[in-house]
Amino acid sequence: MYKIRTLNKISLIGLDHFPRDSYEIASEIMNPDAVIVRSYKMHDMELPASLKCIARAGAGVNNIPIEKCSDKGIVVFNTPGANSNGVKELVITGLLLSSRKIVNGINWAKTLVGKGDEVAKLIEKGKSDYTGPEIKGKTLGVIGLGAIGVMVANAAINLGMNVIGYDPYISVESAWGLSSSVKRATVLETLISESDYISIHVPLTDDTKGLLTKDKFGLMKKGVRLLNFSRNGLVNNEDLLEAIGRETVSCYVTDFPDEELLKNDHVIGIPHLGASTPEAEDNCAVMAVNQVKNFLELGNITFSVNFPVCEMQPSRKNFNRLVLANKNIPNMVGQITAVLAERKINIEDMINKHKDNLAYNIIDIDSDPDDDLVGKLKAIEGVVMVRKITV
Image (cartoon, rainbow, N blue to C red; front, side, top):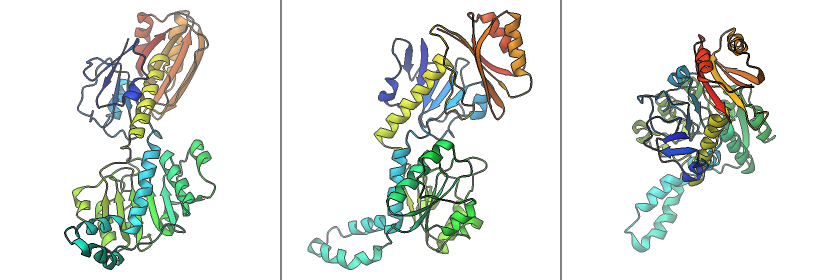
């Protein structure tokens, strides 16, 4: 019986994918095999020895102690793409809000309450203060062409915009899905200097923190509209406000506002609603649950942020499988296979993959791996996790 702990309210549509005859699911389980989480901050949480994986029902994993998990051999999953449509729709909304002064107009119209029969006349008189350009024919620069960035770029093409995309690390899958009408920028500076609107779709890492600072604002067209539905920290707030003051940036739409930004009339602060749709929550939960099942039952890894993609289907219905994680250093595979050879255990199939400082192995063998074998494998210096799966 696998034990699953939920740290937030997780969609029942997702949790129902766990077979109840082999999975126990609750928020109070003390020694879980897996944790499913949304926004709960896990950095100060003690990770139990039983924990094998954490699945984040969403794309961002800032609330999870990745390095600590890696040291313990705990696989961390996320669900990129599961909430893409919900975020894309809000980005398109933000694009229109940034252009047409819709929010300011609505707020002003509400001030007319109590004017009675004068409202219609006042509306017609005051509407000229809230004019703004159409987006058709304008140029949108999309920084980051992952699942969401591709959908935003394609939607903008369908709305009649010219689109420039920049992503030096674009995946083959994303490239296949991207409209051929999207112009490629080979350097970020080209996109920034040519765009009337800029939308950011990159994760927050040490490399991307402060992606847009004073030097980048200096390259932008006067009156550019900027959208950030990815993460706070990608845009330097001090430099942004200075650019707004110079009228370089006419509007900044963000899903991650803070008090400093909310004070500025040229900032539209949305309360992190990108994935706040029932469809997105359901999709993320389903994807997270399927990742956990695939890992616990077969040892397969997909969409992990700290381990490599590594999948191997069993060659027969009843199988004996070892899964091992180790530091990505020389002679690890040799030491692992030597232990199996010493026990006269035949390897039926094997796959080894690595990502950064970690490697992961799936090994199918011809006999049931006992606890003594697991112990000897764990004793190899550099091995951080060993698990047996028998069916």
